[in-house]
Length: 436
Image (cartoon, rainbow, N blue to C red; front, side):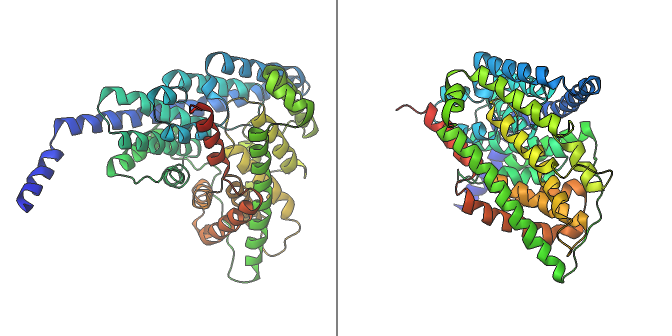
């Protein structure tokens, strides 16, 4: 009996069918990494072009942003209705949906292409969004399309979509492959109890390494040297974790309420009946916020966050709250776009405010702790949050403080918004696509 099992295992290892599936799967992972890298470069170019418009006049967004957001929402509804919003909830929902027709409404090469182009157009219009969530949906769509070239079991297919797509999105966006793997497992698998196989993890690693090949092994926010000794300075960890959890929980609560119950009054009616006009109104509000911030709240927020972390120049004390508002408005407008990068910028902004009131630690430590606290409060994925910030800053001396602040923030956020943001939105997609 034992001999038969050994022979069966050897046969499976050399099975042409098995290796065909592996090659197709790994090839898809390489394709995901390539597209994610190009998407990253395109996002940077879109940000630069928009800021060149601002150099001409800071008032141009009053025209460009409303028209741009309205055009993006119209194109999304008309041609790729499954591409709106972040992309992470769509990828999570695709696992639970049973029929290929239902999955095809959320994951396809057409949706992937539309997601990339429309997210870039949104950035060109000045929306406060990121590319991370969209890259997850793009990666999942590519892996789903690759399933045509080999026979995958349903379980293998689902794991591949989420793990490879999620990891490549995070890894390519921040050059943090470890965080990509953690995010794919912690966030994507939390609602669907899946186990990962060696093939799936290999695909995750391949997609991350491919993105590094194109983008280089850079550190997203540079090298940061910060440390918190084991003394009263740890009070800063609790303060930053609580504040980040409160603010992140408020963001999630507002977004969840608006997307599930709708906006109140005439704004809600406009959102439901005339979404294109509603998007134009959101664009006008976004432009007004941009004017109030001195044109600092447009785009991903990467440059502003890096300035705060490195202490290179000063930003107004209102940056955190204005970036918060700009991200809420951008997300609720219905344009394709994620919230990872803006959330890190918002956290850095609030940390910049808090640094002057917390004497227990250096300003650099406060900024990092509040950043990880706010980000963890929004996504409620504490391990992913502190691993991302640790890898982005190349600072391993802050592992324990970042970890503690992240778990504190998640616990506080769940008191304000009991249901995780992405999980709730994924359930919304499932309920809308499932037959009554």
